[in-house]
Length: 411
Image (cartoon, rainbow, N blue to C red):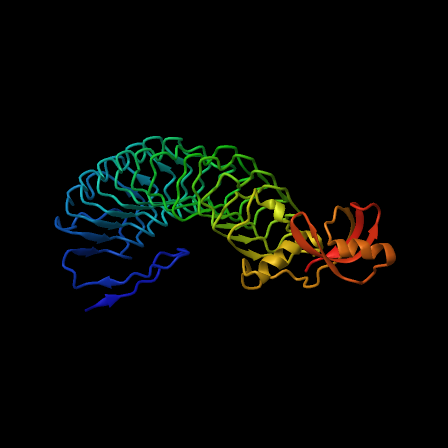
C-alpha cells in the first residue's frame, strides 16, 4: 500500500491539501500539483476518481471530462478556476461528489449541473461566488449536501432548493447575507442542518423559517442580529438553535414559543439585559438554555409560556445576576433535580437576597394570631404560601388580616 501526503503546492495557497492518496487503485487518476493550466485530456475512460488539485487551471470547459461516464468522485480543489462552462459536466451520469473548493468561481449559472442525477455532495467552499442563478440546482434530486461557506453571496433565488428532497446539510457560513434569504423550505423533510454562521444578518424576520423542518440544528451565530420578531419561527421544527455572539439586547414575548421541538437554545455572548414573559413554549420535555456572558440581572420563570420543562439545563455565568425572590424557582428546581447547570454555568451568586414587597400571604392561622402579640417579627422565619409556592418569611408587618408587607427570600 503506497500513500502520499500532499501539501499546498501553489504559491500563496492559504490551505493545505492533505489527502490520503492510494496509488494502488488502478481506476483512480492523480494529477495534483503538476502545473497544469487546463484539465488534462489523458484521463482513462473507466476512471472512478480523479484528483486534479493544486494546479494553475483557470477554466473548466466542455470536452474536458464529458467522456468519463464511470466517474464517481471529481476533485478540482485548490486550482484557480474562475470559469465553468455550462455543459462541462455533461455525461457524468454516475458522479456522486464534486469538489470545487478553493477556486475563484464567481457565478453559478443556470443548468450548470444539469444531468448530474446521481450527485450527492456539492462542495463550493472558499470561492468568490456572488450570484447563484435560478435553476442552478435543477435536477439534483439526490443532492444531500450543499456547502457554500466562505463566499460573497448576498441573496439566493427563492426556489433555489425546490426539488432537493434528499438534502441533509445546507451551509451558507461566512458569506455576505444582510438578512435571512426568503427560501421555499417545503419539501425538504430530510434536512438536518442549516448554517448562516458569520454573515451580517441584523434581524430574524416574521415567518422567514415557516416550513423549515430540521432534525438537528440551525446556526445563526456570529452575525449582527439585534431583533427576533414574533412569529419568526412559525411553522418551524428546529431542535437546536444557536444565536450566540450577536447584538441581542432583549428577547421579546413570542420569540421562540412556536418552536415546540426546541431542545437547545444558545444566546450566549450577546448584550441581553431583558427577558420578556412567554419567550419559550410550554410543556417541553427537556431544554438546554445557554445565556452566559450577557448583561442579565434575573432569569424569571415567566419566560416560559405555561408549564416549565420537565428537565432544564442552564448556563448563566458571567451575568450580573441579582438573586432576589424572582430567582427562587431556580433554587427550588435545583433541589428537586429538575434544574441543572452545565459546566461553569452556575449563577455567580449563591446567597439569595431578601426584599420587601406588598403581597397577599396565606399563612397558617397560628402565625397570623401570633403577629398580634409580636408585631416585631424580624429575623424570625415562618413558611407561608405565595402564588401557590412556599416561601420563607423573614419579617411580617400586618396591614390587614389579608394584606401584609413581607420581607421574604427562598426556602
